[in-house]
Length: 125
Image 1 (cartoon, helix red, strand yellow):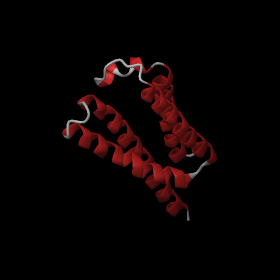
Image 2: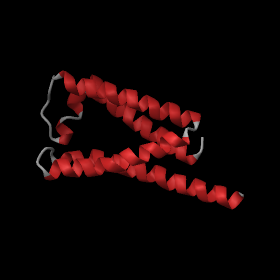
Image 3: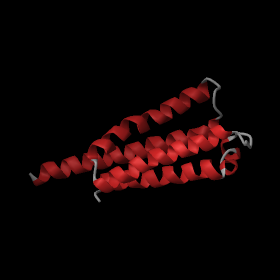
Image 4: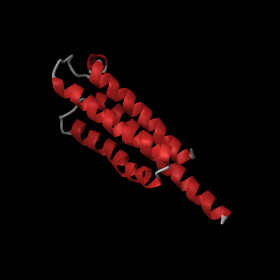
């Protein structure tokens, strides 16, 4: 597994862990991000959706799908912007910033690894 796919795989592991927490024990993480403890089904459904998307990350990384890695950069770079928008408009608490930052930094890591791979490929040709 090259470094690009390793970054996707590790992000997939983080994502699946968060999905499992939200699906099975959401009240562990809700207070951390300033949300009240809840038994509403939406948080568990969100956990399931996160697990499903994590599956794509993990399988794509194992298959070496560079196109998938490239596409994830776009969405992960937008995550901090969306979170900042939600915070500045009062629709989310500042605690949510950590999620946006993790996504953004994960996207940056993948992007940097792609640039390294491209540079190495050019040097070897």
